[in-house]
Length: 360
Image (cartoon, rainbow, N blue to C red; front, side, top):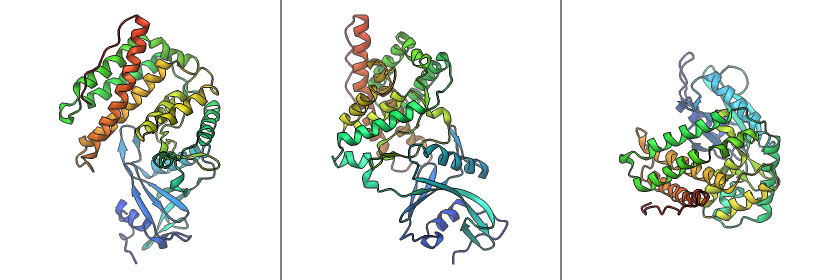
């Protein structure tokens, strides 16, 4: 029997992970437990259930550092995700401590909290379907219809046009403060070109972004709409809506579609994002013009490049050889969109588009 610290001593995260990795921990047949670590959680997959344990971490954008905060985050995750995956998110349960043992639920003292989910077939994700080249147009239309219904019902986020624009300026500045560090080895010429076009768009077309706010296009969205979070099942389900920071869910629906589109393009299926976008243009009011959508795509790709390369700034990054390659891939996507955006802006001004220097 596994031994735990005596009553009154702290139970470490390692103790919790070890306990939750054992098949006998669970009140149902587990058939082996697969433990997966993410940046913010440990996820334990049993035969037909998934248990998610949030790490006691604090970052600028989230705080799971206390038991109360982790419980609140678990309950928020359950509530927020039941709209897009109502039969997947089942419960929030305590991890209990009793004399000499840990247990799921029952009597004792709660030392942590877990989200309980129904386990889905990972072969049905949009990511897997793209990789295996078996995505159908009807599946994408069902996905687009689900998203359109979700965005139509989503609460509008109240903000001023000026605040929305100011956040764009801040985000662009921060992205390039990280990406342009010489030690990271990313192509300075390409970054300079992309940044210059983004800033020119903000100076020349600021009213286009402000108009999105005036039209109440900013909603409480998903926050992390990636192919690996979408199940092309019957019905289509979308999981992992962000619970820890409402500000990260405050989006224009077409901004989230731009994010999904670049993630599909990264997997080699640009047409998937285009199909979803076309379908949704006919189902949501006030779809943005092309230059706005290109701006969304460019900003999302740059953000993903920054998040990838920022792993190298951690004290002990895992797989450090991976992140420059990932960042450069996103930069190539951003560059293609920036060239198109540059043409749009130059066409408006009656000028000739700039040709960027090679190097990504």
